[in-house]
Each structure stands twice: as structure tokens, then as C-alpha cells.
Length: 271
Image 1: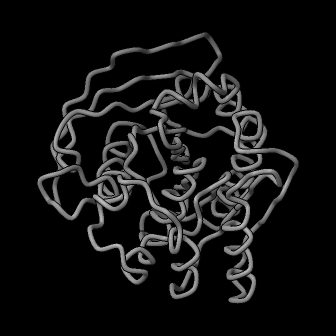
Image 2: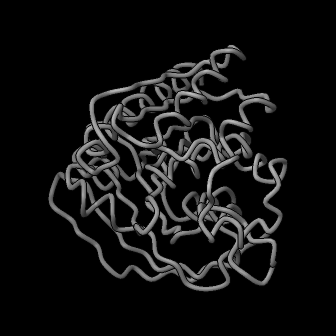
């Protein structure tokens, strides 16, 4: 499928020998209109025009937006430099990163897993291969990251979740989910739920899952860990002190970026 984009650089923040933050406005076919996105490129990206870098897609949570990671975690720019990664923060509104059964409405899974990676690869000097493309996020974004990666293993090579909504089945679902998928049977919901996907899908990508011990979403994360362990699916699972809060996620994000950087480096050695 081909996509047409209009892009406007609304804001670009550059400091010598430091990461650059671009805020983009993109016309998206999948979303049926304009959407915004933050792209962070590390210091060496502008210093060396021959360099190509891995990409990490970083998803926000419910009631958040594309700007959250930059405004709430200012050190994210330092992490881009430290690990030499392009970091992409799209806007998912409160969609749970799901496609809508009504084709006239925004299709967020298509955007995150197809349209946006194609766009980023066409506009930035990326290593445009699943082996150098990872996705993670917090809360709703943790759900979206694992769901998108497991359902699109040809696009993403690694995934993570911070305090993610890992088990959608049997819980009271937000209106945004019921409106998007229509049928709320366990079978239908399970097609988008990390725990149920892990029970039935062959998963061949490294995963990092972490959650605070005081987080109300901890049971779903433990259940995912249990399923992955039972099926002998390799993953890093972390429980630490903390709740469902930005204090926790500010600490978590570097663990995820380091995890992905190590995996990218292994793939670079093989290539």
C-alpha cells in the first residue's frame, strides 16, 4: 500500500553536539487527517551525514500525547546521544493504538505498524530493517507496543512495555476499545491483548516487560510473564518499587533503551 505525506517541521531544537528534537505535522492516510510526531536524532546524526541509525518508537499512555516523553523526561535527549538512537514519539490520542472497525475512522494500528515506519525511513537516515527497529511505551502505550510488535514481527524486531495494560480480557474496557473493535467477545478482544497473543502466537522477538510493585496493572504483567515463561519465550521481566507514575517511567526508559541498544549491536556484528 502506498501512502502520501505532507510534512511540516513546526519546531526544531538544535544545540551544538547535542540531540535534535523535531516536531512534525504529518498528513496520514491511515488516520484520515493530520497528526503530530516528535523525532529525536542524536548528536552524531547531524555531525556525520553518512551515518544510519536504529529507531525506537516510543508510545505515550492514555490521556497523553506525542510531546509527553520530551516534556516529562527531558533527559530523553541525552539518552538518544548516549545510545545513538533515533527516537520517534507519535500521537496515539486515546486509541489504544487499535484499528477501527469503521474504515472511515482512524486506523491507528496501521499507522504505527506500517505508515509511520515507512515515513520515518523515507525522511531520516535509518537502518531500515526490522533488526534495527524497536517499539516500547507506557501504560496504554505498553499495550500498543507489545500488540503492534507481536502482530507485525516483519516490521518490529524487539518490543517493550512499562506498566502496560497487558490483559484486556475480562476487564472493564474503556469506550475507546469497545468503539474500535466492535465485538467485545473474549476471542475478539484477545486478538489485541498481550497475554492472549502470547498464548497463541509464535513470538520471535526479544521483549522487555517491567512494572512497579505498587501498580494496579501488576497482575496483568505477572500473567504475561507467566505465559511467556511457560512457552519458553525469551524475555526480560522486571518488577521494581514504584507505582503507575512518571517517577517510575523516568527510571524505566533507560533500561529499555539499553536493552534495545544491546540487541541492535548484536545485529550489527552479524551484518
